[in-house]
Image 1 (cartoon, rainbow, N blue to C red):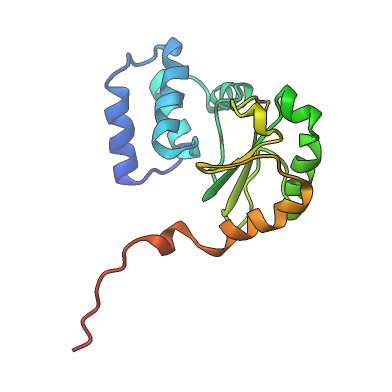
Image 2: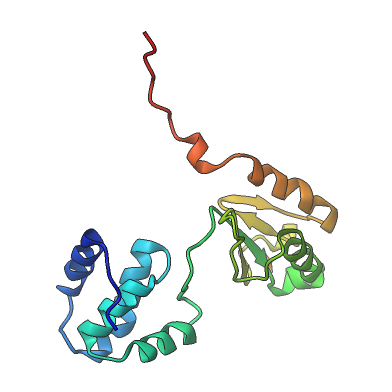
Amino acid sequence: MNIKNGYFEKKMHEHIFKNYEAKDKSSLIPLLQDIQSIYGYLPEAALQDISDFVDMPLSRIYGVATFYNQFRLTPLGENIIRVCRGTACHVKNSSNILFAIETALNIKAGETTRDKKFTIEIVNCIGACSIAPVVTVNEDYYGRISVKDIPNILKKYSKVSKKDNLPQPEVNLA
Ligand code: FES
């Protein structure tokens, strides 16, 4: 069954496909990477277009997309929390930090909250071992944190939506 795409999405996929040979199965991974670089994840409709283009069943495309950690099948949340589980952070109890964040947000690592506010990811050493255990939220680093710091950190990012920060158009009420 062909899944319906929006017109612009379809055109965008066709534009990407121009760089590849139709029915060339070896282009599957780069195609998935290209699509993910645009959407931040792999939407089902895009996977269907790839399936048609490389002439592979959609189920096999899903098989490949779920095999590799680099691919995501769901959109990222507005705030990406990365919990370092490298050795230095591990010995400083990063598993407790991860558990506290998962519990507070009621999701597991790799998942996104229903309101799309937060995604939790596990990462290996992020080069800040001297301040282990380390968590990053978007571009911000939080080092030497403990479980009791988690509520305040989450609160900070729960408050303001990035959309709320966009400049608002001036409204002339005259
Ligand atoms: S192990 Fe966590 S920053 Fe290096």
